[in-house]
Amino acid sequence: MPTTSKIFIDSSVLIEALKGTKAAFYSDIIKNNNFECCINDIVVSEYLYQFLGINGGAAPLSLKSSKRIPNIIEENISLALILNDFTFLSSSNLIPTVAIEYMHMFNMLPNDAIILATCSIHDIKILASHDSDYIIPCKELGILLLNDN
Image (cartoon, rainbow, N blue to C red; front, side, top):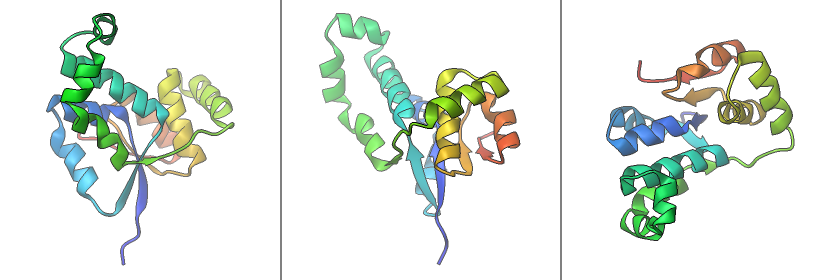
């Protein structure tokens, strides 16, 4: 019986699929039964923020000001709820220390560093992302970076 590997799904993979680009990459990962697809609160936040903009046709803050967010959610609920298909990895009190270390080591932005820290803390050895900022850190940390390039 094949073993299942945990794979962390970066928000870029979800967002590109939502836009209708790079959807085959997303589909190949999601349909692969050898992967347990994982996300964290950063991915949830980034995806839902972009979800609002893409489906609302305006900046999320404008949608909030015009009170359109409830309608966008109602009209596109199935696209929002795809997040329930993933294993949610809880945060840890180690995240801030490791994320700051990665920001320093790799010149990373906070959300990317938190995602990488989550992978390290949860011993996830595969990261799926379209973000090239992960290339060097993943190589140095022994994490396989899957992308469509």
